[in-house]
Image 1 (cartoon, rainbow, N blue to C red):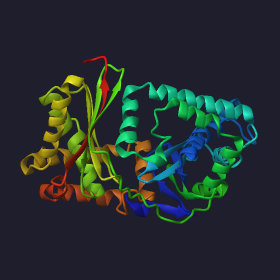
Image 2 (cartoon, one colour):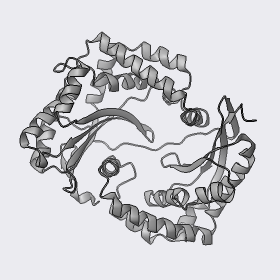
Image 3 (cartoon, rainbow, N blue to C red):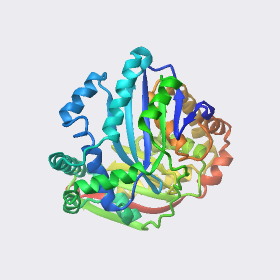
Image 4 (tube, helix red, strand yellow):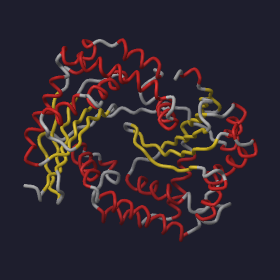
Length: 411
């Protein structure tokens, strides 16, 4: 996936790929990071697809989507390091297998939904609020998701993300219910003045792409984002009791800064089907029902996560430390690096069949989340990497803390 295939028109990039009968769109906007704005953005994501200056009800919008070959259109918010983004996405049938008329109608529909909101509909606002509250209630009743939220809330103590990582349902509901239509409009206007860039990926030609850019009429703010994070984390062992049947454990380690190539191969060494996490936690010690390791790239952290029994806590921590020590052993590291390189090469070969994954990779590329190297350069760096080079980073891994949501019922 060479970056020189990216064509730029006013901050929106095109990557043509005729292997698909579809194409995907992502538009990235810089969002506010305070807690009230986070709640407003959640409601806004739901509200935008409920009413509009052109389509007065969500039924009208749904019907039009179906007429346009069941077009998928959505928006969401996400954290990229220290930056929060609002992302609009669309998945469409290629005009090259339908008709040019379809392009005009499809682009008009996307523009109408996103550029012509109606911030006067109190009923739609109340429905959007109820939907978000219902979703959060459901989300927090999932023990694994609850444990992830508590991990970020307690370990990283990020006050500017309190809403995103809160388990206090009353606080969340009060915040959401206080949102007004004026709040939605103000947040929307802020987004429109903070367009970063966009991506159009798949089976679409340059004329059609330029037509889309013209329809959306977005002006980028022309600045690179700073994703750096220097988080002060809680140390020691932290336990939270919850009335669940299993126990969820995170063991966190600090490392010195990794390149994107080093981070990518390290995650494969840890997480592949024959990787260190599965081989140690499951095959060797039989400790877990499920596990994985995650590299928090900008935060310079690695955590090893497992779902286990509370009685196996100490052994799980020992096993996690064993995994990290194995990463510092040249012989063991070389063995797993060879396996990871082979699996990564196979993954690259099959990647051409996965439209959604490819568009996500390219979106990270235009956001420069992993720096300026393109995918081909990173893959070459991985295949040429030696165990000694990776050990320069893995030997710096040190355990920072242990966090667990502890079962009360499985003593």
